[in-house]
Image (cartoon, rainbow, N blue to C red):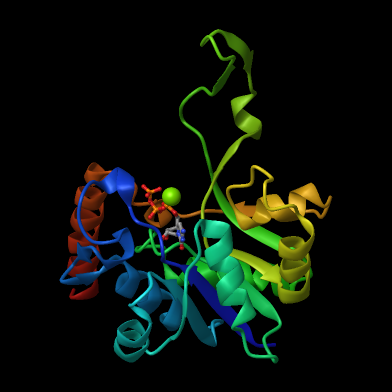
Length: 226
Ligand code: CTP
Ligand code: MG
């Protein structure tokens, strides 16, 4: 079994405010992307990494991080599709992991791959929610409160059998309101397993998330040096 990690890193990071594309912002003296890639490369089950980067960053990223690169697309789905199209033939399992989740541990990637190897076609990490989640209508009036115990906040890396993920990308219409790769499988009626997520796999979206990541990285570095 050959496992490739596909990393969409071509977003602009608009919610982070003005500056470099999010994946290229600094974290711990390097970039969010470099942090995310290093953790994937340390995962025992990951054999190669393909990154979808902003146009113009292909050569530098490939040289600095030791990855294959492609130019990303107009949205996350297009960036993932571009990276999938660049996978070597012998890859049979794919992890899709956001560059915006730089501290997701290697052990999480290995756990996701393990569940794919065990026979699940799609596997995603998720955490229980602490807030109560309400669905509202266009006027802000609550229409439903979903039973919290049955809900999960979904993270990446998400793992798939390669043929299944490629089929999902090919078959689900481009205008479907899907925000992750598992959502494509769901629309085709393919079961997706949720395994325990990791607090450290949180997504850097707003400026405060960068502060959280820096603080957490300092703790991790302290633990590693003891
Ligand atoms: N992504 C991508 N190509 C795009 C859009 C997003 O590869 N055209 C990637 C981002 O780089 C990120 C991941 O998808 O690693 C998750 O997206 P998100 O957190 O929304 O990042 P951005 O789109 O960069 O941020 P924003 O939406 O605030 O602009
Ligand atoms: Mg975005």
